[in-house]
Length: 224
Image 1: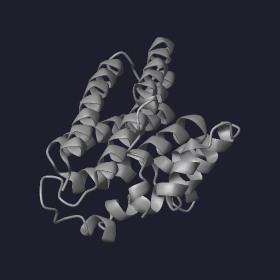
Image 2: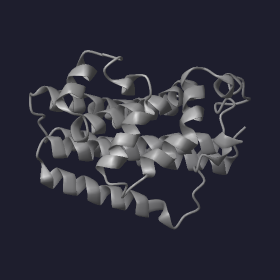
Image 3: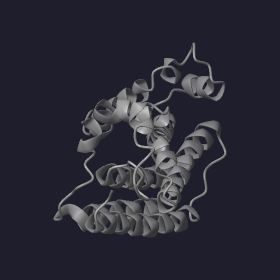
């Protein structure tokens, strides 16, 4: 059962994500995606990331924590696929993705290859996605596929059910940052540098909003 302080912490994170999601929705209205296959597929994946973000928000607001947690993997996958399609994929790979050709595109069988290619494209200047996947992928899959971590949290004593406050805050922050990164990529695809700069600034502001506070949603409780 969550304490009063824990409930307040979740409510604060929900309010923060609600404001962010509304702002990102406004940003999206200013961007048009080109009609060629690469940009359409990449933009579609990234737009799905934003929808997952809103779904996680609404499900958590409704106390449907299991369904919200089940989207933790999907929001990560949709973002990495979108970024990979735009920044990394060859024309043949884009075609293989469009045709769901698992033989020609092993990434569809091993999603870690999307992240590997992204980090190579970035010249390994950032390994955030790889570190995140290495640390949390099994946990995200357990929640997505109703593994023991998901099933074992179904019968709590209050509206939190059995979900830990750190897990809920971690999920909300994952959705927040991946939504920001997705909108940044969408802005670049649409050639909207002003939107891209606004999103980059908002990302910095979002980080600063809790940079000096105790960060409880680190996901450490997931790994226990």
